[in-house]
Picture 1: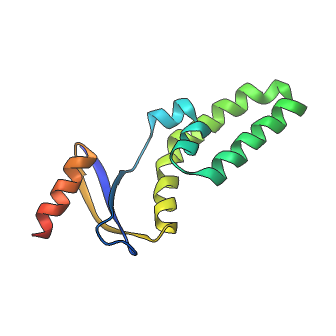
Picture 2: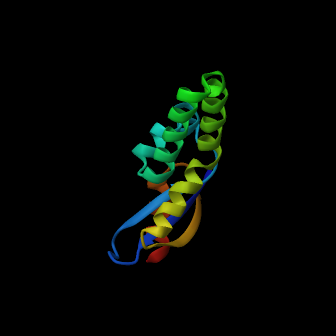
Length: 113
């Protein structure tokens, strides 16, 4: 079972999101592309710009940079998504252990009644 954090938008009350925390295999594989898909524009563009700079001036270090960059995204990508939600007027409501995000939301709703 995974640990899910339930977030609620302060401006739109029915808007709930369930995000798990921890390592992300997809972020490890796709790196900053995964960040762009998840809406982490700032960090992704900084990362891609740095890769472009290294490619232009220090081509020998590009493979190592891609490896460490993707490792960074795999380890901290989900934490960056949570921080992005907090910055977007979401607040954490509850921490729930469940096997999927849908079951986490169902558990949250069943506890509300």
